[in-house]
Image (spheres, rainbow, N blue to C red):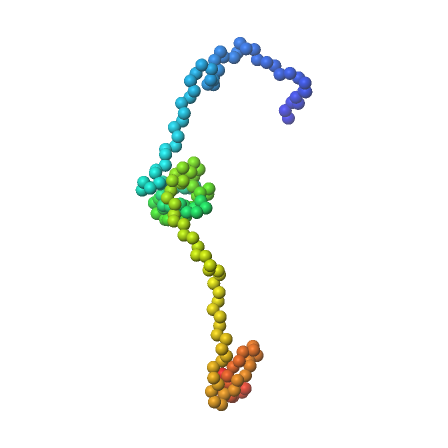
Length: 166
């Protein structure tokens, strides 16, 4: 168990003789600002035709074919098969889940797929109405009767043991 600290007790200060004259960290006094880091390479122009290669979340290389709506991308995977997919498989991946982080500038430069609007005025498909015409003509000598289920049947003749030819 660590020893208890007493309240109100001041910390000891180190003597300045042990501190170095120059700090070990860079300071802004009398020095030039650090050179800016090189930015990520610019993405290829939108219609350049150059393939856009990105990394998937599993580390595979994927070629972006087109950008769809709501963050979905159509990609061709590389020749290595793993749990992400088969070799050279075409998959649709979503931005936050399917790709490694830090590739937004590459994904933004992908060509946009043409947006096909839904045709308006068409609701859900309706069933075709059944023919409301009654049953066909009754042949001579036949009788119409209702079945136990309520349907109309045409009895052509009587068979043995209470059966009828319908």
